Image (cartoon, rainbow, N blue to C red):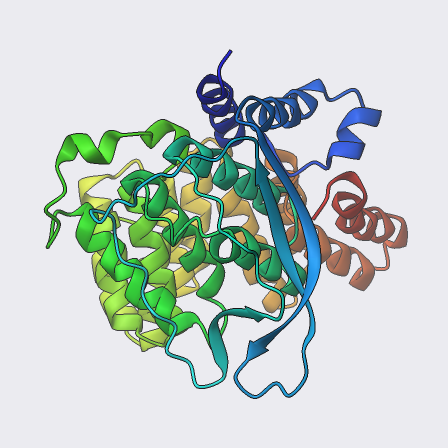
Length: 379
């Protein structure tokens, strides 16, 4: 198999497989799927003659640093690196324009020459980054690793392929939307990507966009719009985010935006109109319960779904918990957990209800389940 075939197989495995389990845990529990996933990426790197490893170098990250400190960098070596010309028909990377952070880490000892990579090499390197991102906790250390992948080795700066460029920029937006010094760039960049995907101010031929699109792992257009809407919310632009969520028909997010704007009557009118069009949709009835805080809507949703709607049971249990009806709340929360066990907040609330009812053995069981995922998976 070629490196392209390996990376295509790895990307599909990464998209559909439960990647939240750690590799060590997977090996000791006989979880061969994740082992195969790691092997696919290893084979892709090997076939492409790429050697990737992290290292530390002295440098500065902010404009006001007076001394150089260790910075995380990614050393990249390739056997035989021919020159590849850049492609100007790719989306532009928005500048950071921050008064404190530098655009890029300034290293004391710079590499003698940058390694020129082809589009498939960049796709492989970006896929390795995606694997680490989906299997690690997004903390400050990982943000430095992300900078090393996307900026230091210049996945974005090499401007080689439209699909890889957009995928890398979109991933950077997702990481930066919660960081106060980078969120403005994330907003501008995600808006630019959404416009390009809609064909606004983009003269790139549609066939050019398709080059290496499967190898790049590029997400569909609605993911880009979700990222843009979430970034707008981070900046407090709730009204603009509301319009995007309405276009995407993400009614949960629409209701949350109306709540933040203090316009619950508009949310209720909208959901009533949707219920009239889809009278058998129990999730819409749940949303009415979230808006009005009335028990009858949740009970109706439970009846409509033949008691298979975990969301309805959870919301009803949480509402009764707020009203200090601990026994009834506990029953609804436990039923929700029977339908969908992976709900940490629901396990905690059920444990609290059991503790208030002095059913300490049940409380211990629930609180213990809150801790199990930390032992069974990476994060």
